[in-house]
Length: 428
Image (tube, rainbow, N blue to C red):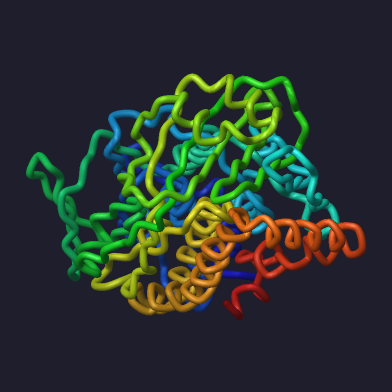
């Protein structure tokens, strides 16, 4: 049994052994066998996104006192859709959140690849992978269930808390923009692409523009088909899938372009500009895009994986450590995996430094492989030379008919990896 599973099991066994600390549940006995006692650690998590909240839950269930600070004034419904694949589901399941996830998501059955004229190329039957738990949901719904779970196990949440500086040390400290300082035994930087914690450990690591821009939108829809539709066109593609019982549909559209575009998800764009870029796509796409009223856009940048993930009781998690491009739908899943492995490594180590070193060792090779795979998908979707595109799509059609299991099986290394199991933890 993993250290993190022992923590969860111990929480259940000692559910009656409680003490009050500002209203938080602080188990009197939570010790991972062969490891350190996390109930004496005061941990500050920067960022109440998917990774930050998941880490807070995992660490709290190992006995640490955890406080999450979030720069937004309130944790509200922002963002759009995301996909939880079986490797991410494994973490949520181990945290006891499987049913809550199923309640707010559409369970995916297949991925249908089409060319930009709506012609079917091939279909990936997800049931053939041997991993059934693929889920489509709104980011806010996943964040909401994690927030509820975090509060339920005694995590303290503070909003409107913008960090200006992170200072590693024996008692690491953060400074907020109002001049306040806040110390902890361990600081977890889950503060995203423009992470203050990442800069504290690595200095400036400049990304480069991939010459691609993305749009995202959510539109009302009556189709509840539990699948991803991916339309591939010259230098462009669109991905759509249902949300909230099929009442809504998530749209992500990506175009190659040489003009620089800022990297900010909050940028509003004109829906007509999106429709213009994809005006030569087929009727299915035109119908969806006709419903778009509000759309955001941003530039896609390739960020290097942080060389330093931890130093002097400060560590990184999720996009703060390893941002990935959106061509494999693994951003949230990698953050969930990070959260589990971080808690597991700390709970099984003799001291925080050893635990943080083990955490990076277990995660670095895997996330680099995921990032490389995601980056490599872009050109496959954007084939512009017509004979080459015809040949590639014909090859996919033939492979889909003759060896459908092998088509989806090529992702076993990704979807079949379960960080909550001992066999997965031995390798990367």
